[in-house]
Amino acid sequence: MSDTVGGQTRAQLLFGLRVATLLVTAVVVGVLGLVNLLRRWESHDLPFAQLTAFGALIAVLAGEAVLLARRRPWGRLRPFAVAVVLAASALAAVTLPLERTASAVDWAFGAANWVGLVVLLDRPLRTVVLFLSAHELIALSNMLLFSDVHKGDLARLATGSVTVIGFPLCLAVVASVLHRLATAAATAGDEIERVRTAEAVAAESHRRRRQRFAELSAGAIPLLTGLADGSLSPEDAAVRRRSAIEAARMRRLCAETDVVTNPLLHELRHCADVADRKGVVVELEARGQWPTPPVAVRRDLTDAALTALATAGSWARVTVIGDQGLVSVNVVADCDDVVPPSPATSGVRVEVLGNGGTVWVEATWQPTT
Image 1 (cartoon, rainbow, N blue to C red):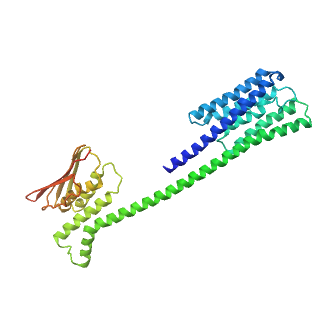
Image 2 (image 1 turned 135 degrees about the horizontal axis):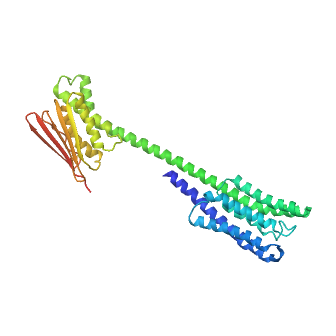
Image 3 (image 1 turned 90 degrees about the vertical axis):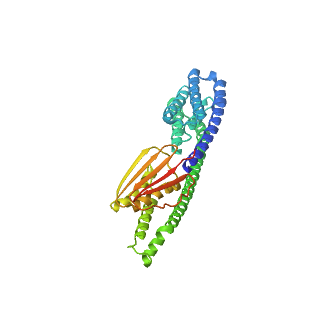
């Protein structure tokens, strides 16, 4: 969850920066660039080539607007968009009148740089620097190849480059710093959330351990204490019966933490394993599909069964039948009278019938909607 929140924070910050940069660029290109182009329309030898370059930049800005509306990045279209911007810059440069590079007639020199920044705003700072360098190199190459360069021309280019490179670069630096800060803040938030989760898991694990210890304290610990101090004899049939029942409960308690498809059958198999280790032949059969009972309900359903299984003499048969409205656990075994504990949950009902050394136990549960 914390990773999602951190990602959303970074995405929102980047979205805001993209919107602000698009608005600034729209003003620079749509107002200042278009005004310069129209005002000096007659000065251009190939005005429609300049208009084509202007249209290409507007198309890139329109693409950014569409992506922002859909909250999507440029993705695989980014190299194509950068190529369009550089091509528009080159077209506008080579069709300028002689010796007018970086002058008031050269509207694209101060417009294409901002369009490129729009496309590359979410990329690393070095990528923006490379683009601005390429844009500057186009203007410089055009001046050196197609004009008689004088000191005044170089001074004009250098002066114009301060704003053409400096302002977009400053904005790119701010965007990079904000992105790093947002990433660091999100990482710190994620770490705090992980620590809190770990503490919560540790507290819950401690609570469960104490709960299990309390459950064992009611039966297993007094039995072990009695066997240790000699007050209980292993030769006593009642003691052996109690030991078998507590062993089955301990195995069931361990099985409760297992992640399985059918926890009720899984825990019954562990209860039956105690009888199987004594040589009792146990048959386990399941029919139907039923919702997973809560832990407390499963304990009530298996308490009666494990009592019969733990005290069975030679055979036992366990049948689990269920659907969405009723779950029934039946045990038939050759054992003495069974007195299972009373169910702790109100939805569980237990019945016991005995007849000549054979005991039938049924525990039923009706899920509530």
